[in-house]
Image 1: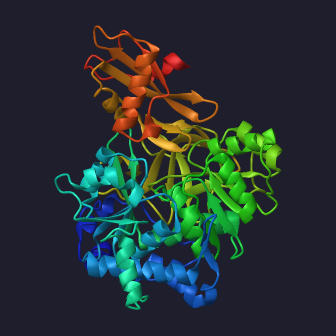
Image 2: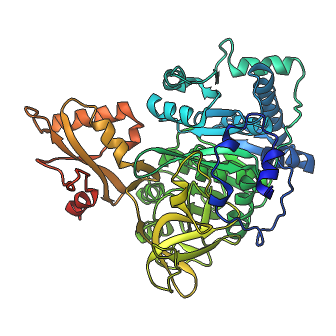
Image 3: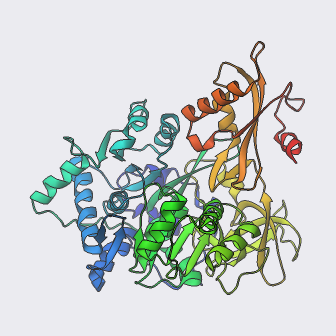
Length: 553
């Protein structure tokens, strides 16, 4: 019996659905821990390490989470997470290994729910607040999700999704005093004096979370990450590039549903005994005001937002004090040199660029403020290795463009998905990025090798938008691609062939855009629509999206 099989047999998970649907160990990437500053024990619960251990180490009275109105200290966060874990176990009957969907805006309560699920041995599945019932239903079915904790204001779409065949067993809303809500059940636990929870002794390689991404086909891919992986990202990028201290105040614009936001706004600050400012729906003006008022020192965002913040400062429309801001991190899409320059001019601060992926959980290429190099994303984060390879997996020489291959302490494990064999080859993760390595080991990004559209930090699959458009009675055929945009990096553009008798005018464009917003998450809608008389196809009727992109170049 292999070591991997032995470890699976000893898993704390009673519900073994995720374990049973991982790819075979031979299809996993090679994991490397030699350069990591920590040695991870076989028995490990990442929520316990991030929260319980910090309280035990004397951080109980330090601030853990902040909003513009109040603060939660480490001890209070622990008490709240324990009460939620008690509700999950005693009220819902959660068994270790059950999947729990979280749906909410960034808030201390959402953070407490995330920690509670892991303390109880569950597997967390976070979801974007803007997702519609169809998208939520796909996640529920794919991961066989059992329960959901949902902000009350976001219940409608989830209730529709949860009632589908094989749907959710139970949804507990929070931020409401309604009977049967999570809040009420937590009050019952509090009145009984319950603030302790016997944490489930998960193993380091038990699944902790499932993060959904999308590929060029639009079909969701579910990336499984272990308890050890969560700690590994905390001990890699931030240790090497940020050097966090307990006095740091983290902030940012990404939802906790993104692994980028999860790391930067929850896991990293807790790992270092620091605090995090959570804003539900940050606008540039609110973000700037909050960073100034709270004296934030580390901020995670995307290039689009950094551009907007720079413009706001330059306009002089708002007062700000960024003297405490010592690290500005950008990821999610390529960082244009103009954006970096605009932010430097407006704030006097440098941006730390980063490249990561959902499959590897967080950033694996970056730089410190001192090691920045013009035109490059950065160098490999300590703990990871990278190389540039050709289509056959052969290493390419310095300066020659090819596919980025990465390995380290985290890696891709898709849930029941044959695309595992496309992402992992010869033990390396092929991230889908095209670029070159220079003689000093800096990675220069060129492009993506698939049809993913990255707009303002959001990943959008063109075929998913096409499917939504085709549901409109006026649309006969369509093709969707990403085109360059100064403000957002890329925007979604749709080429639409109408049914006979339909008038291609501005009013119809607006109708189609509104229709897409109703079918899928609103941020995926086509910001440009061009009506065409035909679409380029192969002899087998396959749409040639590259020819559509050529029309916009």
